[in-house]
Length: 358
Image (tube, rainbow, N blue to C red; front, top):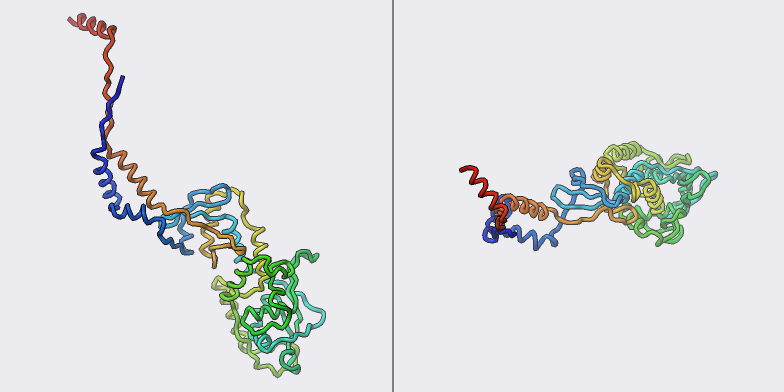
């Protein structure tokens, strides 16, 4: 037996030209996609996260999604959830204060003293409160009456703060000079503020955050002549309170934190986030991706781990699939012709049937 196949090489070019015309792609465009696809610059905005199509979960740790421009992305489910939780902690967490039994005198530089007076609410957000004595000479008018405190009730894993952190917070706000300790003390990312180089990613993030997310207002010193032991108060305090409230109502509480506080928030966010190896439903994956649109910096977690990577442009894949489907429909039909000879028995049966008919 044998078969005969119709040769379709003659119409292959015509079929491909018809497919290109049907999908709206010229020959030059097709070549450009093939040759220049790897050099294409891919843009992704935060609003694109709201319109991503979830393809599925890979290896119980990564989400595959397609954006509106038909680019395929792979997202780290842990890093994405950690960054969302981290920014919520920064916005909503109030650092507890520990009242001191007696005021702790401070010896500040003139720039630091002015910085504290100008940013009273910001220091209070960080857990620092001061008393003010106008009768003392400059640089000695402020004393600590409360220090920030965070950690377990028994003191384990608590982040320790001291008067050197006041100077370092002033430095983050642009004050000149550091009056207590060296540049590394209190700037570390360990639970005690040590470890100058222990977590460079968190330190870099803290530096970027402090330079871009600062909410401060001038505090009036109109009542500087008051003899009480409180900070200078004035009419502008109401404006500062309103500005602080508006920041929160606008969806962002812009505030500067010490690197040790940044590290604390990052550690808490990490432990409470979706872990690698956790299977997710379609709705859970959609929620993880869509929430990135509300994150201020969604591109990496606080520890420096990227939240996503671009895989490839799917447009050429879609075009190839359409071409293959249309070529299958528009291509020539393959015909098979039997080449076998009838057997002697078949011939005899045919003769008998002819005789009966006669």
